[in-house]
Amino acid sequence: MRRLALLVVALLALLPATAAAQDEATMAKRLARYMRGAGPYSGAYVVDVSPDSPHAVFRWRQQTPRILASNTKLFTTTAALSRFGVEGTLGTEVLGTGELDTEGVFRGSLYLRGGGDPTFGSRRFATRSYGGGATVQDLAALLEDASIERVTGRVYGDESAFDSLRGGPDSGYGVSPWVGPLSALSYNRGLFTEGGRSFQANPPAFAAARLDDALEAAGVPVRMKPRPGVTPSDARVLASVDSPPMERLIRLTNKSSDNFFAETLLKDLAYQAGGVGTTAAGARIAASHARGLGARATLVDGSGLSRSNRASPFSVVRLLSAMYRSDDFDPFVGSLAIAGQDGTLFDRMRRGAARSRCRGKTGTLSNVSALSGYCEARSGDDYAYSILMNGVYPPSARRLQDRMLQAIAALG
Image (cartoon, rainbow, N blue to C red; front, side, top):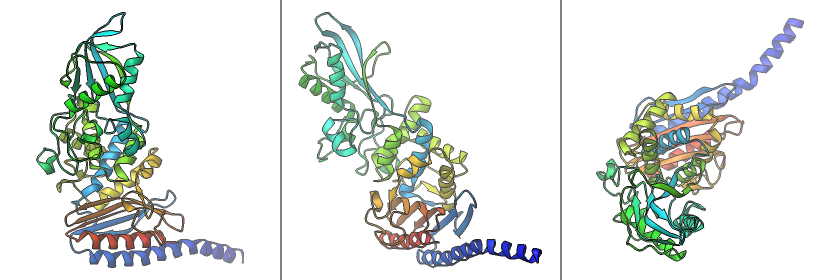
């Protein structure tokens, strides 16, 4: 009797697991039906990443690399988070060559040296666009606080932390209308006006002129006209301001799928590692970081605008799974759009199990639609997913993806 009782207890303990397995099998059949509708150039992979029993629950051509579109930003932001840390910042400095006399006259020139902060600009623009950031008004106030009342030289804008290429491979390294001009000394993301009517022709010269204006407004006139230039090696730091922390920068990048932020962060990776920010070097660093997490990808830019950015759904989920186990998971998952609530998913999955339970990074190019991220199912289990659809009509593909996430989130 005792042996029979133990057997019954053991069988009862297996029932929930068996029921869960049956639910996942039923879900997998539904996902397969949706993936058949996506055509032959699409793939997907779904893994239960819960610590107690991680396992794959759906496979569909998961090993074949696909065009990533803006899912590329997952690789860019995870690398940036790893290299700079959650609280890491990007600085913008004013350096000087000259001396400050007893009457408050700085006899020399000022150098506004950019450090790749994508939020740097005017106070009004930074507040309205990002909720705050480093500004020329802050720098002008710091220089005034340093007892500088007049400058005999000029303000130079120094963007030498990055190369001079204004774009990525998709635009032939020229200015892309989907990004704006890239520069280590970007002001208001390269917009000529705060309303965004056109782009700046010369970002470092434009930024130098805006600091000149801010100093004038603070009662610190600068005698000579601003221009671009490179900071001399003997210049000393007079004032500096920092970007928002990296946790916030990656949230600004991923939630709204900001191409300008992604491309700037990619160059920041290269600048931090080797002293000069280039797209190619940044892409190598991001791909190398992913390999260290077990995910293989071909990367050529930071935003995903190039169709040469490719990875398999398997590799994307490997990246997501590694982040799930990382100490940086909370800031990373917090950077992803929430289904039915914000970012690029604010108008998708507004009803059903996926609403608020699923987070993801979208991606869209012509004939390409991607969605990768996490879902917390009704069962309480966490799932990492990657759905990469190529050769599709994006609006129809998005409907299939939404149905797939509803099915995942409904488990339990």
